[in-house]
Length: 209
Image (cartoon, rainbow, N blue to C red; front, top):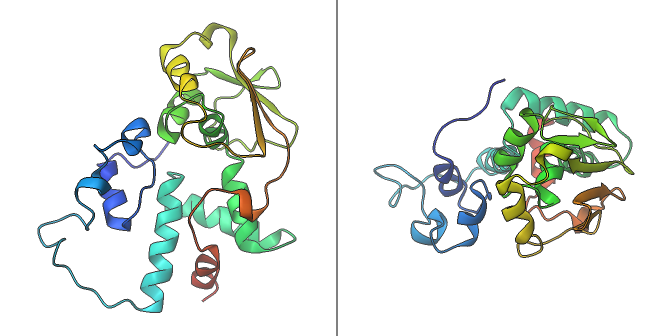
């Protein structure tokens, strides 16, 4: 399964914003954006580029794609699927990305980052409605319940992450029971409650050319 394996902090610096790719580090003073808020590279500090409409649209697309840590072809497939759905294409795209299994595990506080959530899922540590799921791109449906498998509930990474649940921010379309260590996807989110600082209309414009 293809994935990006390069330096994650450089991606944040390239986009000029926090993409929350490294878990707790992104919330601390050790975050690369806090130290070097300019593009990476030898000439990053003095780099000047013309801000054309295409460049602005491309950077917005790259920002969203890198935030959810998916590659270009998969992102394009999500967009085409969102375009075929009823409603606003940009909002549909964000909902599809939010419903990914790795994102749900991250939002529910079982993992400090989407990358860690992806790894835990691939290693068979999670289940949906009592059935094992080991596909990070699995689409969680409204009403589904996500939880670590019985043998995985005491994993240190899950325990430590749950202790910090809430400090990273929560979303109203997900509920988490700390006693049973189970999360639920309770309703489809509207755009105003999805905590993603993206202008999705720019991505729609980019793909519509």
